[in-house]
Image 1 (spheres, helix red, strand yellow):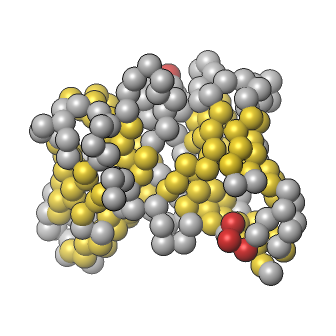
Image 2 (cartoon, helix red, strand yellow; image 1 turned 135 degrees about the vertical axis):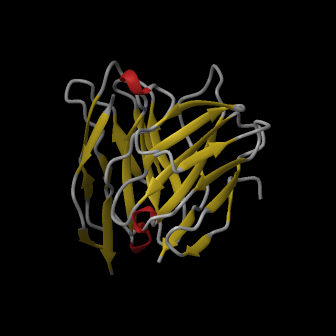
Image 3 (tube, helix red, strand yellow; image 1 turned 180 degrees about the vertical axis):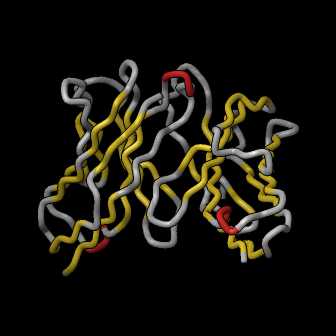
Length: 116
Length: 115
């Protein structure tokens, strides 16, 4: 399977704990995105990378959230001191930035976070 | 930045009925427009897209036309099937001060098709 893969698929944690999610994009894609989706809502943009550079961060991304893409391939999203309001599906997507790019994103199946 | 408003759900139809899900957007310029679908238990998948005004995107019997005059991108299907039951998201490409290199998603419209 050469699609976007995310790990873990489901994480249950206690409030105050730290969690980390990993995303492996489609191999030839140089852009990687993180979105958050809560029940009954559409995905909300969090941040994106082009290669290893983090080019945009949403105001939704509080200082407890940090994302990295150290070698321009996989990415991690860490949430420190989790709160119950962080419970959501965290979606990763990738795309290729080139002259033919129309903006289409390819999504993984998501990592569901439940904070107790 | 760009924003999107789509028809609230749920939409409940009988098999073979005609479907319309409305989507309007506000944008700087003329962004590419997308419809994504999320089937139960699955990730978001691209359904169709249109990259410029008057383009018609189509896939699996679904169609949507990029209308710059009305800033709309309504999704239609002539005859829905039970297997079309899913949540549908309209998504213009982002823009303005927020940057163009992302998609802005609507809240989604849940479609339930009954036999």
